[in-house]
Image (tube, rainbow, N blue to C red; front, side, top):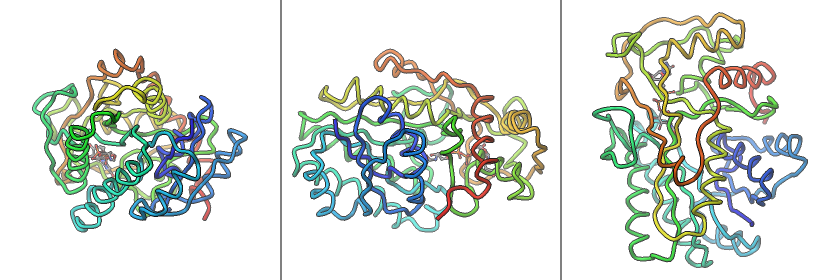
Length: 337
Ligand code: WQD
C-alpha cells in the first residue's frame, strides 16, 4: 500500500517511515524541510536498505499534492506536517493557523479530488488543555491554552465536521503525549532547529556539551518532587502506534480517536536522573520560575488504543534515555545540511 507521509523527514515522520518499510508499506514522503533536513533520507536508506520517494514541497500547494497522490497511486495519508512550538505559536499565531489548519484543509481537499479516504492525523495531548485529573482518556473535555494547541483542536473539529458530511471516510486522530527517544541504531533522532523547546533534546544537548545548563521550569508544582510530570513515550512505540492504526482502522469508516502514551508519568528530575545514568554524564541544571502555560501533570489512559488497536507502549524511560544518548553522542550536531 502506497501511503503519503507529510512531514516525512521530521522526527516522528522519519521513525514511522522506518516502521512502515519494515511492515511492507511504501511510504512516499512530502516535506518542506521547515524543521528537518533531507539528509535523514540517507539514514533511512542506511538502516532499512530502501530509499523512499521524497517530494520537496508544502502541504499548502494543492496542485503538488494532487499530482503526487495520482502519480504514486496513494491509498492513504499519514499527516505529520505541522508547526509545533508552543512559544512560537504565541508570537506568530497566523503562521500556525495557516500551516496547521489551512494546510490540513488543503490536504483533505486534495485527497477528496483523488478519492483517497483514509487519513491518520498527528494530533496532540495538548488538546486536553489543563486536565482536571489524570490519567486522561479520550472522553475528556478538550480546550486550548495556546495557538499551537488551538490549531490542533481546530483541525480535529474540522475533521469531525468533514466526516459527518463524508461518512465513507476513515479518519484517525492520534493524540501524542511526549515523544522522546531515537531509533536504536543511533542513525535517526530528534534534531530540533535552534534552541530546543522540549525537555529531552535540551537535556541531551547539555549532556553532549552543546548547551551549558538546563533551566528546570518550576520546582513548586503539586507533584512528588515539585517538578512537572509528563507521559514520555518512545518514538519507536509511537511509530508502531501509527502502523497499528493503519492496519486496524485504515479501512473502517469513522472517526477514531486514540491517546498514544504509556499511562505512566515521569517528573523533570526523574528524566534528568535517567539521562545521567544512561550517558554517565552530569546534566547541569538550575531551578527557575514556572514556564507560562505549563500544567503540573499530564499523562494518558492508553487503554482504548490497547483494546481497539492491540497496541501499547513497551519501552521504559531508561530505554528512551539510552537511545537518545546514543543518537546525540553519535550526532552531536544532529543531521548535516
Ligand atoms: C516537558 C516538561 C516543562 C523544557 C509540549 C507540547 C506538546 C508536544 C510536546 C508537540 C515540562 C519541563 C521543558 C526545559 C523544563 N509538542 N521543561 N525545561 O510542554 O509537556 O509538551 O511538547 O507535539 O503538544 O505542549 O513538553 O518537553 O516542553 O516540557 O523544565 O527546558 O519539562 O516545564 O514540565 P510539554 P516539554
